Amino acid sequence: MLEEVRMGAGGEPYYRVELRDEASGLRGFVVVHSLVNGISAGGLRMHPRVTLKEIGRLAETMTYKFAAVGVPIGGGKSGIVGDPAGRNKKKLIQAFSMMIRPFLRSIYLTGEDMGINVNDVALLYGTAEINPISVAKERMADLGVELELSDDLDITDTEGNLEELLNGKGLAECVEEACRSLKMSVRGAGVSVQGFGTVGGSTALFLSEMGMKIVAVSDIEGVIYDPRGLPVERIYAAKDLNGRIDRRKLNFDYRKLPGSRWLEVDADILVPAAGKDVINRRNMDKIKARLIVEGANIPTTAEAQAELCKRSVTVIPDFVANSGAACGFGCLMTGQVEYSAEKIYGEMCRRIRRATRRLLKESREENITPRQAAIRMAERQLKKWGGQRKLSAIR
Image (cartoon, rainbow, N blue to C red):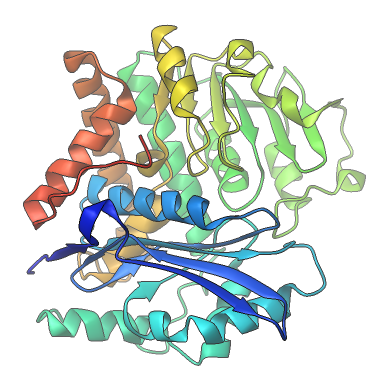
């Protein structure tokens, strides 16, 4: 396969677009940071305070996420300013769909992200009357690669939401591999998970299955805490698609804590899986954990990362740790793996574990942070593909 990397001149994204529609009240953004083989990918998020700058940072993160796990796809991201629990969510998604239709039809594949669930993604593509499988097949055919995927394939029609399972499984694999590299015990390790949506909820399930003890989980209403360990399956059954946990369905004892306390509890491992810059100079001194594995995109500020590294707290960067869905679907959409849940899972797990080992090894040997090591790995891959641009916004 011929990999061609295309990025904007002067350190700028390839495309940066702001969209407005008076009729629906829509304000939205699309940023294509890079194109590899003529295509990019990255989720759609909805939040009342999402900005073009934030979407740009996330699009750049996606470039390095795909590169870190060796998937030849460029990085993109999109966002809608709005309340994901609001009554006009459907209207905003439909308006956004029609406005970004040229991108969806040609160079940009999207999926779930903060505030956007699998049903919302189906609505987006359905409104635009576009089949992402067909788009991927056309792009790969231009490169001489035939994807043996049916146009009628519904990648969400599996036992559970495949994207959610890939994200959770990939993050859990990263946590376990990091524990092994750091010589930390896996069985019985205490974990606090911030956010219980697409990433956080499924990650907690997989970590529990590995023998770890989930001591705290949080959602928009606060923290559910028990130092003895929480019944994760029962909590998972009580959550909605947006990660809100219905406390009325929790018929077991637990402590209620304010939302900010998720990172202060006694835990060996923290998994921030909701929101950007949630670990920062104001709260980093309260952290007791030895390992932080970033489930959300850009959840830790650069200042906090540098200080935590000095304190021997290991932070596994987002674009490796939460690359499960990007890696799994990316391998599928570029013909690197056949459509089989078992094969997709297997390839995704292998690549994330390999990337985790390599970045921790390079971090130790070069005396640099894990993020700096991961950046070097990704940039080497981009250079191999033909991209010469250095990282800027996500340092």
